[in-house]
Image 1: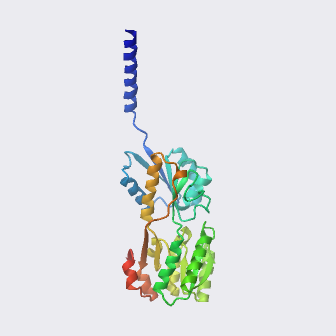
Image 2 (image 1 turned 135 degrees about the vertical axis):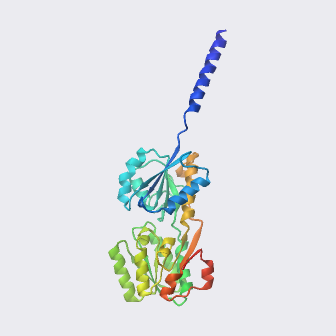
Image 3 (image 1 turned 30 degrees about the vertical axis):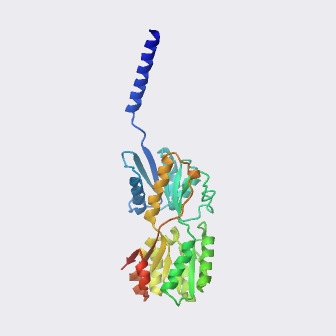
Length: 325
């Protein structure tokens, strides 16, 4: 009899524990989106990431919360927010661009998924593309083959071109490799290349003045945040001096420059959701290889081409993913 009573008591206790557990809501999965962008500015990249999460079955407010943290144009501001971000207890941190670095400098141990334009190995963010080795992984926009392709497109638009200027930010990890790729492409295409290291507005203006004096016929701007920050300045210089400028990110062409050839940002940020999902399901960032973009786009600003007196070959227009009239 005593055994039966003990068994009944034990069963009742198990049922009580199970009932209590079932009544407790599961902890919702939390993602921190960290960017140097301004809170009040539209963020297509955030919306692309949210779309990627939805594709994987995540519904905000039901099984995931995406907290947004904005640097308001300042990398230092992101560093100041790092403590608050950690205290919000995210399961994964997703960083956009240079917002990654202040998070690493702050010693954040939470898994971090990034998208950056730099070479993450040279930036000492990961040990290697194949095995990142720490709590950080993601997608790098650093695709050297695209540097040469942009120059090939420029040559196709201007078959008689001989002299080009290449601008790059020497503080951008991997810039030396991009410069070498540009020189190799120039040699193959029979172009004379002059390189300008620029990482300030003053250096940019000095370089542009030199380009005018030397009669360089076009500019290839290596794609990074610095280049994008001066897209309108490049565009105004281009029209005023009839010097076409090409680069690698779609907004650069949309802001008035001749063309870009580079990664599709919406695809990159949707892909980051796959990393987040894998980490949520138990994968370790150290074992998730850093990827390169798989989709690229050609954007041509036909309005700018007309202002420059350039006729874009019909064959190239047919290849374009976007033509700005």
